[in-house]
Image (cartoon, rainbow, N blue to C red; front, side, top):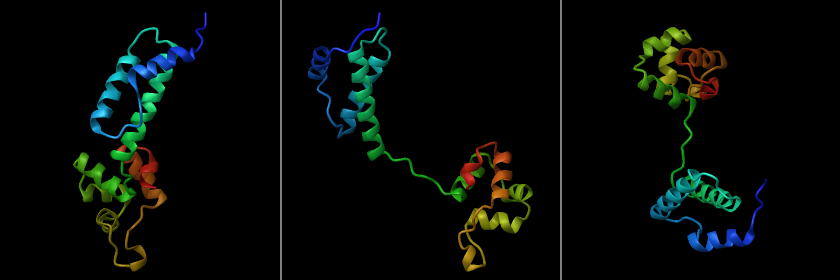
Length: 140
């Protein structure tokens, strides 16, 4: 038997929890607690499922606004992986070919103005992805 959505029951849930746009960390924590309670409730009603979806949307919106995940550059991702795995520039040079190129990529500099922020070539990106066992898109 498929349960149907009951607007009146949903209205009662909304009135009970009074969800709104989340504007503070405290409100976010309350919304997360309620979402977890609903998520782990066996046999959720369609109305509870709808409230859970609303909470997740509100939580995501708050967190994307207040705690954005900064996108790294290919060079910064490489430096991060090197730090995390204690990889030296010399070891990196063995992966991509030349120490001078590895130093330019890691340090983000080059003697040429046109290569000031030394980019990682497609071939180098593929070699680095294999070496670090990550997706090649981190370096492109």
